[in-house]
Image 1: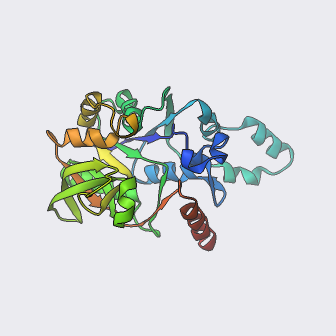
Image 2: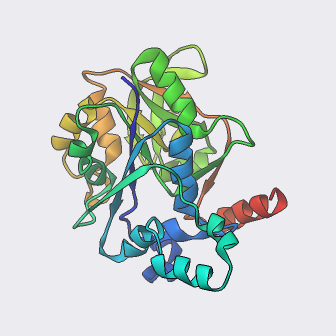
Length: 271
């Protein structure tokens, strides 16, 4: 079955980027003239996604406005003979839906809100904090989708990281290595404080079979008192296989100021 649907959780408070995130969601941080979430949706479309569900909260209405038409702007440009600027307002060609996460109960809870949207199909998850530049190659999500079509297994994107940084991420314990730089996941730990199971950190791109939802239903609050997606994956491993794929490309964490600036610098140099 094709991966046609993607969930983008965008309901968080963005506390790492305060104070600007009091008024501007981090998903709307500008990168070379477009908000970050625009690139994330484009990545999904490039991977064959036809429908996107964006999980928002009460203070994220600007995301809905961005992906809507502005009739006032179009009329203004027409009156002033500036229709040529309309191409700058072109949006990714994909059907977008929205749902609110009423309480900040964690990433796992946000993904669970997409159960009806997925409707029993395999689906992707893209975290807008994680931004990938693949240098004109295959996008991060597309790499996962291609792997899923070969195996039919849930697939999680990982990259090697320094041990000092692993406590900030979910970290997998790899099992038997498969072809194509993928390996079976035997365990996964959310933000390990000591003794991480490997140097492979989960980095914001996933393709799941619908079995994940039943596992998330049974997950208890974990790290930070939240429903963790990592714990849902860990539960799923008991009954369904899951692979980790080392995705090719440079990853930027938009929640880290220095990485955000480096990403802008990259786009300015390569416009």
